[in-house]
Image 1 (tube, rainbow, N blue to C red):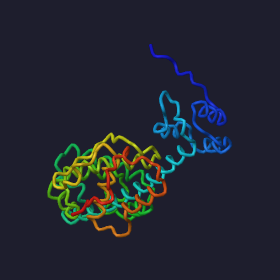
Image 2: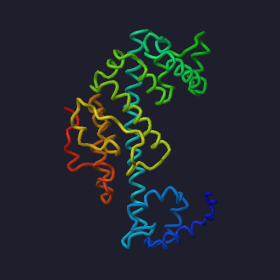
Image 3: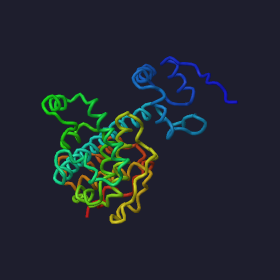
Image 4: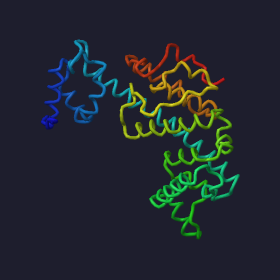
Amino acid sequence: MKPSYTKPSLSYDEQTQLLKSRNLTIVNEAFSTRKLQHINYFRLSAYFHPFYEENNSFKDSAKFEEVLQLYYFDKAFRNLIFYSIEKIEVYIRTQLAHTMAKQSGAFSYADMDMFHDEVKHREVMNTIKSETARSKEIFVKEYFKKYDEKYLPVWSMVEIISFNTLSKIFANLKEKYRREILQEINIKPLVFENWLHTLTYVRNICAHHSRLWNKVLAIEPKKPKNQKVFDSLNSKKIFFVIAMIIFMLEKIGDEEFNLKNEIKNLILKYSNVNLFSMGFVNDWESIELCR
């Protein structure tokens, strides 16, 4: 029989004392207590592990400020990754809408002839209907007020559906349309379908402010056979996703944002972060991801 959960709730002061009892150096207890008021102890505990000796006891050299710096690094890192994924997401929304409209007009996504699987198409259409009904965008209300139509035009629809729904539309499109959408990126559609799934998963981690540092990816990205630079990277670690994003941003020609430089600046600011635990490789800055 499993035991009942009996751990008591602790005040912020008691949380500070618990950390001290576990050998974490806390010079300023008032500062520690104030930070624990701002950051849930359980959330912060995800960053304790590299400072542990054994049995939840901290190394003699471990300091509260070091744990906090790792937390702040991860927060800034998540913001960078989220912003980067948004750029790719907007690009794919644009290319998908343009390709489909060019082939079959404003309501092309309702045309089963563009898709492989009728059951999946029907499921996605039901999802699009639900997401359209939930949308608070003014342009959606004005459109249905003005026009006697069942659906939004595809170029409007792609702006209100979730990233997950977008990836499902792409996954079910016939191969020739998928290839056209990806002509700038030069990744095989089956690999990119998997990459979209991974990016959706990582984006959700960022959106929910969960730990991204040292994450073992639950949805592992595929290694593209036509891009050998990915062969030596650990696809279960977040650096592989960084490499994916840099590769795609360079392929689509985004000149406003350089993720590699942003990561380098972040590492300079938080120089004590263990990069190898994130899947970084030696001389990662010199890897040519786009050839």
